[in-house]
Length: 192
Image (cartoon, rainbow, N blue to C red):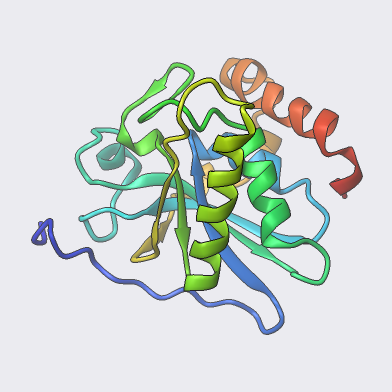
């Protein structure tokens, strides 16, 4: 294992004219299912970010000891959908007030987090978080971590497009589907 004070670094490749942001809002099956439905989102890759272990496995992440969060890498066309809108969807479709927890999923791998790729993204995320806290929508403090990007490792293939492939599974029915329905109710004008 690497020195826990030095995070491993990875690079992200983004097609020309598109942008990338990484967000963690609990189980990546949920966040992937939500963001795949948005107009202007060109790709969503579930994976692991912000940890101290290189090339972690899902099993290692589940121990809560690697430092990674389950995240999605969202590739989007800023001419069709802006980062501000993506962050609004992000905060509205998970509970950003619970530390290291989303529903029954507990552990630091399920933390609410934004891993920004440049200072403009970080500044926007911090500003929107502050506005959201001041709005009074939440009675508890928003604990979303907003931190510079250091690393991202795509999840194993069987996690990709999980909800679409396993929609009838109980977890998908009781945890993922309500988040998708919330998206459809709150943001129907943004759907593909």
